[in-house]
Image (cartoon, rainbow, N blue to C red; front, side, top):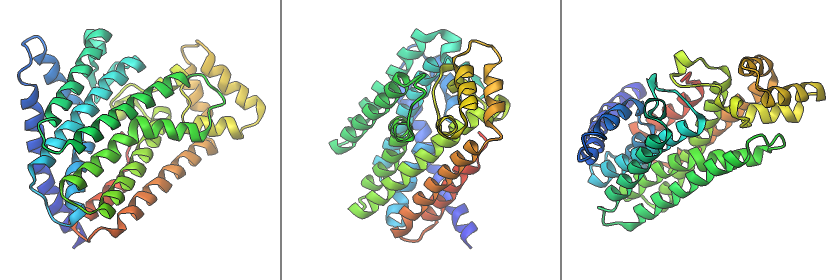
Length: 328
């Protein structure tokens, strides 16, 4: 019965997501002939559309009923524009060449074009959001984009800081990744007219799912393969960005192994990424990171316990579980 309820909810969700994609493309259709090929190319980056999906699901799960409010579709398109912009900017920062098995914009057209395209997407997101009567949405989107930028800055400033703490790491990934996922859930509940308790519950769900998602992303940067994950890997190692497995290893390993990891991270050896992976993969530090991701997923599921039972709530629970199981 639960499986059928989830299937029904997914079918309804996919129909609404199709409208989100239409709105996303329509908003950008007025771009010049020179820019439109780039707009078409970034359609490869949208993937499962987690954030717009959570806007729609948040609205439905908050009340237990499917919401047809047009604000939900528009807000879902807005968060996807912001997200895709951050992906384009991330690829510039990481020097990445592949994103979802397609060439990154910076690899195709250079960093300047990529930065400007990302900026254009963010400006379109705010333009679209400003068409809504409720200014609370625009303020929340603005606050969240500030957090995302701060998170990226903090991560950049923390490069090659071999004393980075887990608390500092969690602050960075909350800002740069989880804050937009949290906001997606919050916006959906707000647009559906949910009460404060439901809005808060969904925000907590989004925060914990977002943190778990980034932890798993950081694990895959060490353990994954580009063919499966579909994007450039090893960039954290290459740039000296400490992630949870590395932070735990530096805090718990014996001194010779700590020195070995730092030496590899500081090295210009072209094989250093493979050496770091071989050093970390069999350690308890990988287990520690996976366990922390599962803890966050459990907290996310617990947060939505107060919501009314529905196929949408079940789908949120299923999505949270997927975060720690994914391989890409």
